[in-house]
Amino acid sequence: MERERRKEKVHKKREHRIDVRGTVPLFFRRYYFVILIGRDTRQETLRIEAERRYKVRKINNGISAFFLLMPFLLLLLLLAYYLKSALGINIMPVLHLQDLLDMFYNFLDRIFKLS
Image (cartoon, rainbow, N blue to C red; front, side):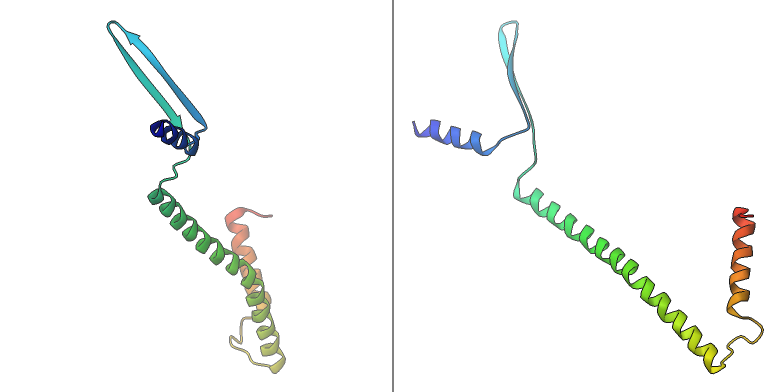
């Protein structure tokens, strides 16, 4: 009786999405087969999955931080440029922002044939 309870307890604990069991009679013998498909709930597998989720979370946090901080960095660079211009500081006297933007647009135009 104890064995039957233990058997029921184990069977209830392990529920699988696909549980196919059967027997095949071949000549003078019978063979059985069991096909079980479900989530692996062993401790080692759960630990590996948790580590993978942690790594993916770290990568996602890094990408999110990059995209959240990039507008602030661009705004800071723009403010620094306007401050430099207002103070009359010319780092490259023959080149200005508009010239750089025109060069960049021409470069993209040659590569992607924009116009």
